[in-house]
Length: 566
Ligand SMILES: Cc1ncc(C[n+]2csc(CCOP(=O)(O)OP(=O)(O)O)c2C)c(N)n1
Ligand SMILES: [Mg+2]
Image 1 (tube, rainbow, N blue to C red):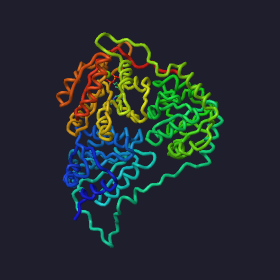
Image 2 (image 1 turned 45 degrees about the vertical axis):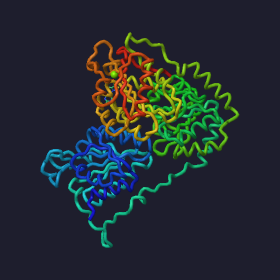
Image 3 (image 1 turned 30 degrees about the vertical axis):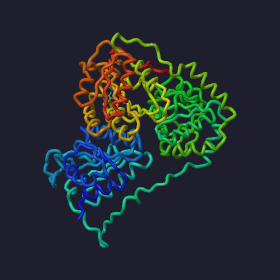
Image 4 (image 1 turned 90 degrees about the horizontal axis):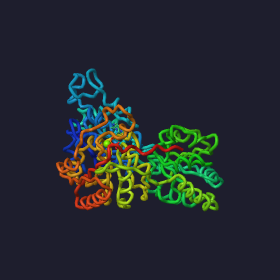
């Protein structure tokens, strides 16, 4: 007779999962023999912490559009592992979390250590996870674990995507599943029927109205966000924008959805974005928002110089009807996938006769505001400036590379100053933006794209947080190249302090030597040409299955990119 754990593993496979990321404990440990039995068709990736496991699952979801699976023991999955779950929640990445109440064999009420049942003397894993997931099932019977998992996959994938969890009361995991008979009051069905989905298509009349607005506009601007970050939508965006000469500005999550050197690109919006993007949005007579929230974080906290419903016509396309007209009131709201709307738009007149003059205006504007022009910087001898790293990446990146960022000044320099040529190449933490995300995110990126080269840029603060991921890269054969911007401190925080510096400076760490201890290659560089060479060496190592850490001496005095006005 089947047990719950056997049925749960079968259901994971039925729901389309081919891998899960974990650091096991109690209830998950009890399940491992079932994973062993299916090891030929299901990969269990062993990480060094629940934090790394949750980030890897989130990034698999982010890059594939299918839920990444994270498994861990209750008290740790919901705390250490909350990092990747929160990122999934904010960034809209499909993810399924499988965990337990850690109450041993029914001792939840006795105040046993680790217990997460919500009983007296215990914490409550279901309550914790409910605050950061779209859906959280609590299975106290074997069949509920199966059905809860089916629903978790369903919720994780439906718009807007995000994390869903299944908490199993630990004793049920090893219990036998009651036989399904004609008399059974609870029936389990195959998973497929719960997961079928044909998305509602955007209303054709509304899209025609949008096309008419674009046709009439002199200076239309597309504001592009996370909703356009998939291969189909990115390709359609390039076609439609080029067809009618519509400027493309992006949010942080939308960065790199379009070739940023193409004639329609004006850059990323916001305080840490490009003046060209901010100014172009400010002068737009029509703003078409595609899969972007219009969050205050990239509109300079509702700076009316950028967007102003009183003087601009606003149209917003979003998969979730609640999100169009959420932050800023709009004239036209279309519920639907950005890709579907773009697909319909390309067959409609969008003012093609104005294309030449629109493109000329964008070119003049980008020139005027120095789009892609790095400010002059200096670094003390034996160190580099962040601007040097941007310049090296600009020359080194090929269409075969994926670029994964972390947090801090190093990221801000790249997102605001590096013009990406290959759409979809950039992978960023756009949810909570936590330090340390980059390293496990890069390992997961390599797993999703084994044929591409993965480069991770991360600060010395960020890498120290999830350093053990290097061991996972070696063990799980996920070779990446890590560029550490080592300025011996929390550069971004340091910048915000004036004279009285406290709690921002780190003692020096040599990440090249540390990397060798993990079985990786380690290189120290202090000049742009050496960094360029090291990235090429890293690429060659990766082809041979080896991970490389390049420790870059960054001038501790180098500060963040000058904030952009509008
Ligand atoms: C986990 C986490 N804690 C705190 C922060 C707030 N924070 C944002 S950037 C930053 C400094 C990052 O330092 P480092 O990784 O060395 O990058 P640098 O700014 O020096 O380039 C901090 C503390 C954060 N984003 N994530
Ligand atoms: Mg630093």
